[in-house]
Structures are given as structure tokens and as C-alpha cells.
Length: 222
Image (cartoon, rainbow, N blue to C red):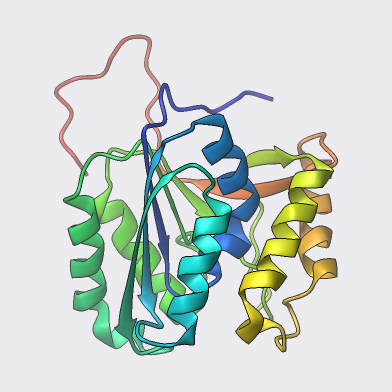
């Protein structure tokens, strides 16, 4: 199994439709990456929840999930469940984050996600970041539209335990949801671990990639 690693990790962009999306989908990866790259610049964009308890939760949670990072959190107040009819504003928000610098890694919802809010965000991400390493994180919810990921980040058991503890500590507004519990988080992580020969893992869906034997130049962005 091949390893996919950026040559350097100076800046990451995290994008979520809702509060908790990023931490649930990639919380273990954030803990591992931020600790492996102290001082990495992280810009997180969340499209909904601005001005509410959800924003407070998100800011506290991402600070905990990005230890030692230079963290910037942007939370907009677009209406939850109505992002498809605000697609232009979604695109503007993502483009604004794109204009702040060149990320080495972008984490966001995958393009196959059938939930309307996630889908419209996922459609804009490759448009704004056509030449970047983009990984789509997984969200296990009631719709059951999980697809087989092609990339995995193995997690040691203490890291998974820490992720689950931080999710429950910081997202009190989510604890009444049937999918928000330790069993579902650990269960999916165990399945992904089996698939990459680890105990636990998070799964990701890579964007398009180019293969070459030398640096590729002169290519038009798509």
C-alpha cells in the first residue's frame, strides 16, 4: 500500500457545511497532522451556525483538534439545510478562503455525499482548489451514503480515544443525534483500520491526481 504525503505541510484548509462536520470526519487526522507539523497554518471555513451556540462549539473544538497550529476559524450564518439555494454565497465564501494563500492540503466533504448541503460545498471545493491535494472526509449519518475510500490515515488507539472524548466535550448540541456516539465513531474507524491493515483509521476520498516521471508544466487548469 503506497503512502500519499505532501512534500511539505505549511498550510491546511478545512471546509465544512455544518459545525462538527470537520471534527467528526477528520478529527484524528487533525490531531496527528498538527502534532507532526508544529506551527502549521490552518484555516477552517464552516458555512452555517454563525452567531449561535454552534459557532461557539466549533471554535472551541477546532482549537482542541489543532494543537500548536496557527488557527483561523471563519463561521458563516447561511441557513442550515438551505445551502443549495445559496450556492453563489457558498462559492464566494470558499473563494475568499482560497485567496488567503496556497494550501498544501484541503479537507472537505466528498463529491459523492448525497446530503444537499454537503453536496453543494463539495462541488465548489475542486473549482476553488483545482491544483491542490484535496481529500474528502467521511461522515456517518442516517442517510447511509458511505462510499469506499481510497486513502486512509491510520490512528493509534489513544488518538481515536482522544478524538471521541473531544467530540463529546465540545459538541454538546449534537449528543442527542443517533449517530453521535462512541460506538459509531469507533466502529467506522475499526472498519477503515481493517481495510488498511491498521487497528483504526480514518478514510478519505482523494480528488483528481496526475502521474508523471518529471515535474508537469504547461498544463491548463480544469
